[in-house]
Image (tube, rainbow, N blue to C red; front, side, top):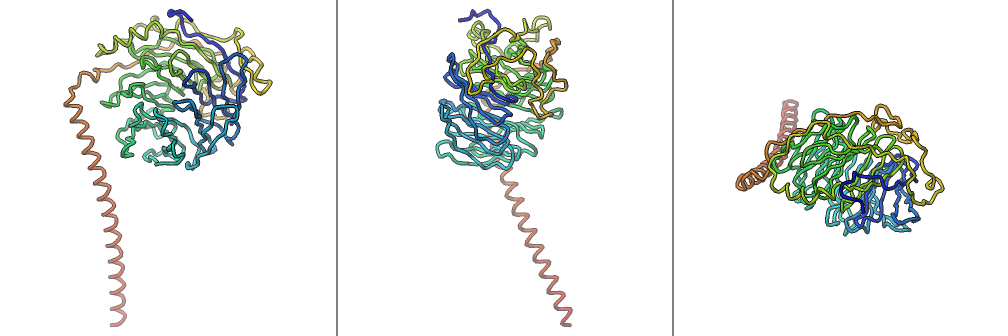
Length: 451
């Protein structure tokens, strides 16, 4: 076991995909890793030494998203072929196919109890599916452009979604209504997710920013400008105290949310990084990108801080001011030039180690996701932490005020529904009036002709 004072370290990498890695997820038991790629394949990697990797073939276009179910007995995938598939993560990989979207599907997400699946698509909708009945349930429509990501809250009562219409929306899964809306005039969010407690959401911005919002009081808590390229993915540590980000600038960055500062920059990829995810226990995280490699890291840093920070978080009402740049810049980069163990795959290419400084950007064919300068060497430029700090925590707001706000929201929902009904009735009245006028005109013409 690594000591608690160590930085995150690269444990191993997996090579087997022929094109950019678009999404990945670690299994709930921490023994497997599922990856999705531009090459249209899914791959399931086992962490046991000399274990074979399984390749799942079936999607007819880029696989955009992959996720294990909470119990690890299912694997969901989304693709540009407009389908969603459920796989059994074993040697056979038997699957079922869902078709309801009319455009490429961008993300999949299981609810925490595993009963529902949310999918986001370029058809501007979010769709929710029943896993027990294996069927479509309902759609959420309010976005005016492609929806890039949709995620359930930990309790399953809400869904957060982000779109290229530059909005982030919060949906109530009970009444299927949009109950909250965050907008950004600069860029759109590539990825969005709830923190483990469900009180906040974090967004990965195409404008190179990472933002953390409190959904209870609709307030921007933190704003990080630590990347020099678009941010493609984020993942909360299970403690909720840390956030890891993946960017087109070729780096991963770990943010300490309690201190409101950048604590690590990891430089292991040789091109844009498109996906990153912590394991369920937080002891591992994995990343993938345009260089076709999947890197598996051991966290280490949370062993020292996690318990103490959790206790301190209970007493904290204000975030501290960010320290000086020299205090927060990453300790050391973590290149993976040394030989590390890789798994055996179904193809011989999977057994070869990547060449040092391998140029991999040509694999990724979507120019909108590429960094402006895609070179194997990533610049080690010191980027200043620009985090905006919150005024006050939710804990200082009386319960009575919260109840009053919830009541106001309920009344607003009722008013919205009433206005919608009135609009429908007005439209019907206008149509009938139009018909009456047309009939009256015909009668008047007929009377004139007779006279």
